[in-house]
Every structure is written in C-alpha cells, then in structure tokens.
Amino acid sequence: MNNVVPIHGGSPPRGGVQQIGFDRLELNRILDLYGRMVAAGQWRDYAMDFGKDAASFSAFRRAAERPQVRIEKCPALRSRQGMWTLFGEAGQVLKRGHELAGVLSLIERRLLKLVDD
Image 1 (cartoon, rainbow, N blue to C red):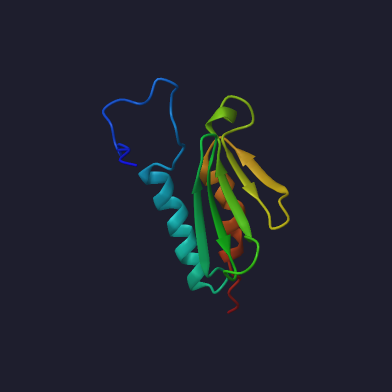
Image 2 (cartoon, rainbow, N blue to C red; image 1 turned 120 degrees about the vertical axis):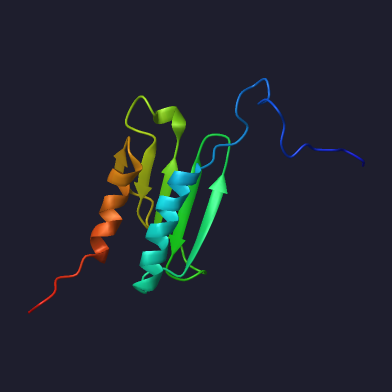
C-alpha cells in the first residue's frame, strides 16, 4: 500500500531507458507546427503517448475522431529507415526519415497558399 515510486533518479534503471520521449527541440518543432495548423483551422486537439519502444504525437481535427496524423519517434529504427515516421489517418505510413524536419515537411506543405496578384 505504501509503495514509493521515484519520479526522477540519478541514473537510468539497469535494463536501460524505461520510456521514450521527445527532447525540447523536437517538441518545440512539433508544437510550432501544431500551432500553425490550429491557426489555419485544420487541427483542434492533440495527444502524446510515451512508451517503452516509441513516443508519438497525434493531431486531431475533432477530439472524438481518429488522429489525422501521428508523428512517431522510435529510436530502435535509427540505424535502419530512420527513427521518425509520419502516419496518416488510416494508419498508413506517409513518410519515414532520419530527420524530424524532413518528415514534417509533408504536413507543412498544407500550410502553403498561392497568393494571386
């Protein structure tokens, strides 16, 4: 009943990392894109999931739907096809890569608008 679970410790557990997460620069880049998509009226909600194997950021048009896109970081795939994956609404892989910027570029194209003179 009185189990004390340390929130932060000096060194990682013996088995390695317990949870994968985003670092500050990655999260800033993702949330910057999220803010621009909200301002454009395309996204309204998001969710983050941190697990043993991967961390993911999901963006929703409406809170009650499937995510429109999901950005996943899986460090185990770093040396193969890249640790970043962009999934579409139906779960299909839209893009993989070693760099977050390259994977997000597919979404950022939606924000570009042609201006007529």
